[in-house]
Image 1 (spheres, rainbow, N blue to C red):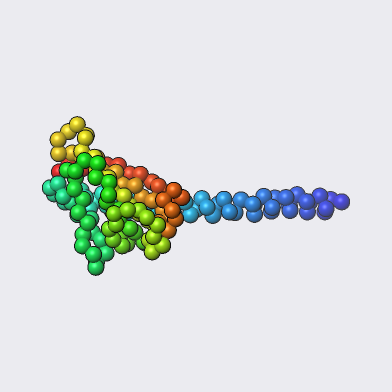
Image 2: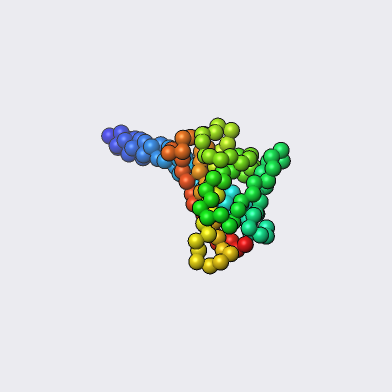
Length: 148
C-alpha cells in the first residue's frame, strides 16, 4: 500500500515537471530573442552616434550600400533593416513584410520635436520572428536622443 501511494506521489510530481517543460522552452526562446534585439539596437545606436551631421549611416551586408538615416526629418519611419539571428545585417527594406530569409526587423523612427534644436529622438523597434505576419511578432522598443 505504501509503495502504491509513493508511486502516485512521484508520478504526480513527474507529470507536473513534464507539464512545465513547454513553458520553460518558450520562456528561454523569448529571452534569447530579447537579448538579440537588445544587441541589434545597441549596434544601430552606436553606428548612428559615431557619425556627424544630419545624415548618419548604418552598415548593411557587404553587397548592399549603407543605409542613410536622416536625423533632421521628423517622423521618418520607413527605415527597415533586416537581420539574421547572429546579428548580421542583411539589407534595407521599406516595409516589414513577412520574410522567411530574416530573423529580425529593425524599424528606425526619427522624431525631431524634442524641444531642443539639433536633437532627435530615435526609436528602434525590433520585431521577431520576421517570417511571421506583422501582427504575430514580438516587438521590443528602444529609444535614445542623438544630437546632429
